[in-house]
Image (cartoon, rainbow, N blue to C red; front, side, top):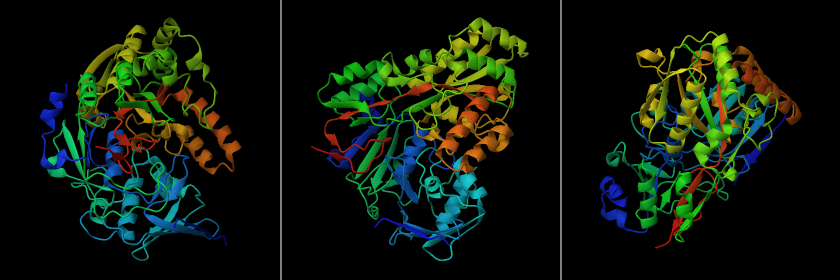
Amino acid sequence: MKRRSLLLGTAAALSLSAPRLGAAQGPRVLRFIPQADLSTLDPHWNTAYVTRNHGFMVFDTLYGTDTSYEPRPQMVEGHTVEEDGRRWTLTLREGLLWHDGTPVLARDCVASIRRWGSRDGFGGTLLAATDELSAPDDRRIVFRLKRPFPMLPNALGKFGVFMPAMMPERLASIPATTQVPEMVGSGPYRFVAGERVPGARAVYARNERYVPAPGAPSGTAGAKVVNFDRVEWLTTPDPATAAAALQAGEVDWWDFATPDLLPLLRRNRNLTVGVLDRAGYAASFRMNHLHPPFDNQGVRHAVLGAIDQSDLMIACAGSDPAMWKVPCGVFTPGTPLANDVALDVLSRPRDLERSKRELMAAGYKGEPVVFIVPTDLPHVNAMSEVMADTLRKIGMNVDYQATDWGTVLSRRGSRAAPGQGGWSAFVTFSAGADNATPAAHTLLRANGGTGWFGWPDDPDLETLRDEWFNAPDATAQRMVAGRIQRRAFETVPYVPLGQYFQATAYRNTLTDVLPSFATFWNLKKSA
C-alpha cells in the first residue's frame, strides 16, 4: 500500500452607471473595468472568462494553482493517497463557512464536484475514472478510483473556465444546464445582488467570515487577503471612455486595455501598463459541426488553409510583435506540449485561390455562414472582421451578425439551424494555460453532443486524449501531443488564430497586483 500526505499547514458616462454611494468614497473601494459585461453569474454554466473571474471572487476551490501551475491545498488542509493510488481522502480545513453563515460540509463539495464534472472536460475525465465519490463525515471527501489518477488535485484546482467552484449542496444539486438562482459561495467576496445593473455594474463586498488558506499568495493558491470593503465592476464597452476614466482617476484598473491606446496610457506617469499573464491568450475560430457548411470536413479544412495568423494577431493585439506569437498550433507556444507537427498548414504562405478551389471541391453550395460577433469586446470584434473578410475572399456567403457579448454567449448554446436562430461560427479566446494540455483544452474536445459549443465528433481525437492521460511520462505525453495536433489539423474541430498577450492598466496607487488574471485579493490601494 502506498500512502502519501500533502499538508499545507469619458468619465461622466461611468459616473452615470456608478452612482456615488457613501461607502464608495473611502480608500477601501476598488473600481474596475472588466473585459466585458458580466452577463452570466454561474461559473459551472458558462465558459466566459469574465464569469470565471467573478467566480473566483465569490467561490473557493478545493485546491488552488500557483504561478508554476502546481496545485496546492486551498479549501482542503491536505489529502492522503492509498491503495496504489486508487483511494484519495481529502480533508477540509476547519472553520469554513458559506456566505449565509452555514458550515461548509464535505457533502456540499461532493455535490459541487459532480455538478462541475458534468460540464467540464477535465472534471468529466476525473469522474469517469471514479468508482465512488462520497462524504463519510462532515470534513472528509473520498474518491475511490477505477485506476490511478495522479492529476486529481490539478483537476480540482484548475483556474480556467468551468472553474471547479464549491457551493452549498442545495445549489449544487441543481443540474448544471440550469443556472443557480443565487450566488452563495465561501470565497473572499460576497456578490451584492441588489446592486447589480446588467450591462453596467456588478458589486462585491468583503466576506468578513473568510479565513485565508496558509501559504504565500500565488495564482489562485495561498492566502487570499482582502483589503477592500467593496469592489465595483463598471462595464465600459467604449475603449476611449475607459482610458479617459482611468487617466482621470475615476477607476483604478482597466482589465483589457486596447492596443491602440497603450502609447497614450504609457505616457501617463500615474499609470502602470503591462502584461500580468505571460501564458497569454489563444484566439480561435470555432465552427458549428452540426449544420452546413461546417458539418463538412473538407469545408473546414479549406478555411484552415486560408488563415493568416499574423493578420489576425495584428488586428487583435497591434503591430508590436512582442505582444503576439505565430505560428500557433493547438497547444500554447512556449509550453512543453507545443510542437510543429503538421504546422506548415498555418505557417506556409497563404494561397487564397487554392483555398477557394478546395472549398468548391469539398462541395460548398453557397450556404450562408451565420457569423456571430460581439461589438463590446474590441479584440474579438477586430479578429472577427478579418475572419469575415477571409471567408468572403475564398467565396463564402457571410451573414455577419454583430451584437453584444452577452447575446453571443447565449446564442452559441443553440443547436438550431443557422437560419432558425442558431449560428455557423464565432471567434473566441482561451487562457494560454487552458490550452497548454489536453486536460483543460475545451476546444480540442470532440465528444459530439456532450461537448462544448460547436459539437465536433471525432472518436479518434478523443482516444488520443485518453492516451495522453495514460502516458507514463513527459516524453510519451509529448509524442501523443504531436499526434493530437496532426489529427486536429485533419478534422479541424477549430482553427487556432494565434497567441497574444493582453495588456492591463491600473493606477499607481494600486499595489501588490498578482501576476495572473484579474484577482482581487492581496491588492492594496494608497490614498
